[in-house]
Image (cartoon, rainbow, N blue to C red; front, side, top):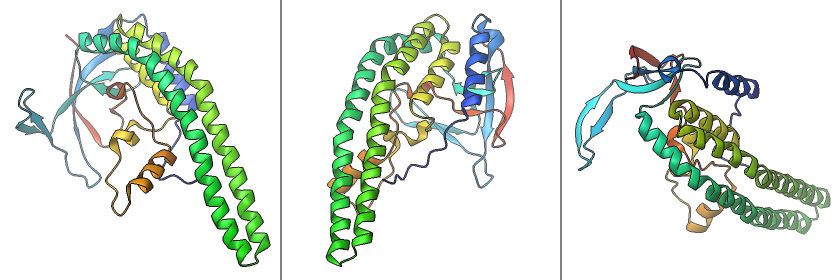
Length: 259
């Protein structure tokens, strides 16, 4: 099975280093570990990006700006959504109740996908191998059957691993959410690491909520493709890293301590 989502797994050693860096700084004061940073971003064409500011009540655009603010992790340079600590703490409070349901749902999703994906592969294999046998190409037909069998085994292994690991990552995310009610910024970074690894290092930008429009597909084709694509579905979407100050496309304008 091929997927259209290009994944670039995160470096596990970098992830471990980042985790223990967070662990070592858990006793640090928030103002020592984090600060507010204002940046400008440039696109691939080198032009400065601009962002629309909307009225919270009406949703209408008030103005545009090229300078945006984030919360910077001083140790790693990672940038997170600029939200007040009490807002992050409240989101962590909600996560404490949501994570168990999310974990069970994720296990059920992969158990549902398992027979469906294998069925799709089996049907595709029968069609392709049957075409080869009809043309008296026995070797090619056997090759298609072997390919389909190995593909089914791979799918079964992947989906069962996702089911088994869900409770472990769910526990890690739950502990991070509980800690986030006490030290919001620090444990937000923890939760981001846990969930990113739970999603196999696939960026939140590839989330199901960001599926681009696809023309020329009927509902069934779109459904099958959505099932087969290894897209993540982040629970704490807004907790993920939004960039890093060392990225050449990010230009720091000013930094300020948290108030």
